[in-house]
Amino acid sequence: MTAGADDHFDEELIGRCRRIGTATWSDALDSLGIDGVLRGLTVRSGNGRVAGEAVTVQEEVAPFGTFDLSHFDVGGIIEATSPGSIAVVAMDGADVSTFGGLSARAGAQRGIAGVVVDGGCRDVEEIRAAGIYLASCHVTPRSGKRRVKVVAIGEPVVCGGVRIAAGDCVIADETGVVAVPADRLREALAIAEALERNDRRFECELLRGAEFGAVASRLGHL
Image (cartoon, rainbow, N blue to C red):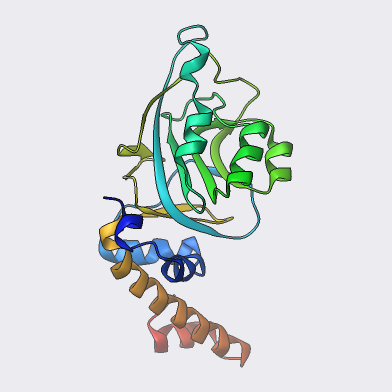
């Protein structure tokens, strides 16, 4: 059973997650000893922050001609990613595109919140025009056709060095991408919201002219 199936990902909870930046989420995860910051990815498209349930995809990459065209099942990935969810594609950092302009258009029409690729994408201008959030390791013209095989959808993957299970919460913005295990989400969110409140207090003190060091010492917060 995924988090969405047992009410972890109701609209109100996702909205609260979306309001908090990934830097604050990272601090909250640090306090819990959770390694949840994806590494090696760069934001390529999207405006604002997205949050949603992870739909995990494992791909295998091999030299051109290894796989049949049917193995490059981007359509299956899009169909498996429900509206508001985020596709998390693991391909071991390969410099091969698994997501392009037409895929972005189809994903946006379906209402997918975003795509995170531990590998490559292409047609960046078209992806940006579609308005969908996307982060990847590479931008490359090299197609995944006959090079990429979708091995599994919905199984745990390692993406950006982080183990992610289907149903975990993914939050992504211009700073980066974090993944929060579904069974720790409410605990992590409470800490993240407390950190966010301290940030706002800190900001208000600075706007009143207080010294940075004095505010940091008083609030115990950096």
